[in-house]
Length: 279
Length: 253
Image (cartoon, rainbow over all chains, first blue to last red; front, top):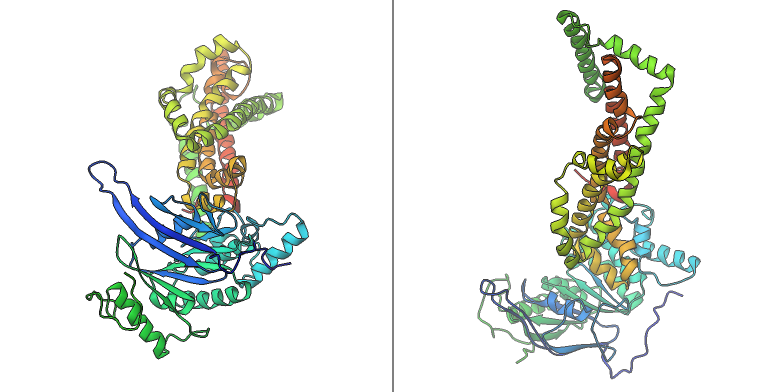
């Protein structure tokens, strides 16, 4: 019962497709100039694929995610899910926020049940219990969010998203506000869950190592206005070890594409090898 | 142990010193009008024996409860709507801001003109007095809702009235409750003033009647103490609601 009901997609059709997407935030009169955020973004994500968007802070990767989720409208271009243009948020595609998006007035159980669509009460209960267990919150069903740690609250949010049985998850730096160890643990858990449930994931992070550990493909974006600088297929068996020399090389190359050296400092662009650089 | 000293022993000590000071002040001044604490206690007992104490307390509480609940049922939905729909707030806000600073006491002549000497007049005044704090706190509460809750709810397909029921109202509730506490405090102040003029029962009437009918200042002070104690009780009731898990998240101090 717990396998997600998916719309059939032909293998040729990408799950998500961005076509020539541009985004400019209008200025407010004389004081604030218009901000060009995205420039000509074209990208395809396959069904069941885990794609990370990386780029420097404030480059517009979150904006791209918000457009894909239907929270923002692009200035030009379009974004398609299952071949249909996105115009509004949809329960089949759930957005996971950076922090504090679980409802503080609901218990863990009620939060997770918030988006459950099953009409039968027993199925509903079973589904909630299943996801509580999956994110390791057994015993906390009746706790309120303020009684939980930041990491546990993010687990609630992930479970709340999964329990709505979406086919796409949009994750906007979901572990960005957590401490280092919790972040590592949640990454590993997320991969486990994704391998079991195989939803399409579009995951925004500014942490290149996080992207290498998680993604099937990494989309590297430059500084604002952001264009896609490179698309890097990771192609390493999971679970991945960041100390693996191949991972380190990949990290340095992605830094290079972003215009940074291996310590994350600014260098001139083009000093990279191996990674395919767009345009 | 230290907690107990601070929360019970010290307040008790202050009360004892206050009552003793009061007693001595009356004795030393030689006043035969202003009552001693002992006279106030016997006055309270006298009122209780005659049955008027309970009758007047019930009368005052009835008016406060009715006027306050009317204001709750109108003020909360009104505030939620005005807070949610910007243009509606723009239209109504000037009127609200002009009416709000008018003391409910100033409405007494109009209340008597419209409702005569009846329960309806003080109830109307309490309704008015509670309506503004409740409505304005609900407006502010909606405006302060974290956008992320609304976005998340919309993402799960929640819209329209459901969005109000499942997200807007619970998200606004802690701040609304703060407004209710304020409103109930004001309502209790107003009922006493209203009863001095517009009716012939209740604790406000008791005070003014005890003075006018026989300069019974022991009964005046007894009435005042009752008002204080019941006000404390009402505030305690609202504070109990603030302890519920559904609102505590928004009231952490």
